[in-house]
Length: 273
Image (tube, rainbow, N blue to C red; front, top):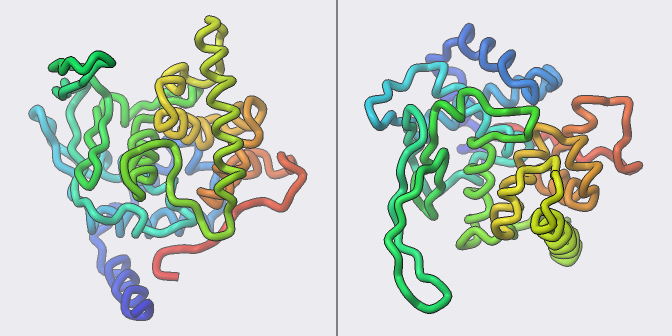
């Protein structure tokens, strides 16, 4: 039924009530989109239309969601699947957006088996088979210089959860090696935790040391926001992410550099193709 899916997606894109001026502002606001080729931008536009067709973006805490908010969130989410497919975000329907930080309440069992009730301010949260929850203050103005992007972070968790609870090991493509992924991430995570524990200054957010799932999400942020920094710090992790996302942001920013000495890992699979 691939032909029907292609036809249906093309029909949705063709009939969409899409604000082109707001979209242009979105493109110019995010450097990782502005650096794309025209073909990539066209593919991104289609993914954003399809994403917003299938996902409801609702405000919470009194926030009224406008087009520029919806487009900004969708664009940042879709950078991860630019060369993949919208099906990677299947199985859930909603993005909930608060004006600023929100308070999450959950139970946590400590090492002694004692259950604690926790209230914690957060900027983003992803639920297994449930919604993505975001702070608009953080989604609207990510700290790109620091590799901080709450939308990319939470949607990386969503990809990680495709095969169960987030653990830093999303379902890999058939042409990828589980051993290579595990080796790259295990080694880098151990080194990063050692550096954080030693009090070293790190160019990557120290939150990545929290656990392997957070390491994957934070390095995904760095992959798109400051790719050269990630490539310099952990080239094997960068290579695995390039294979997984089927993109090479270093080459997008600086096409004269062949960062790994290998063929670029940039696919061209678009909506319905």
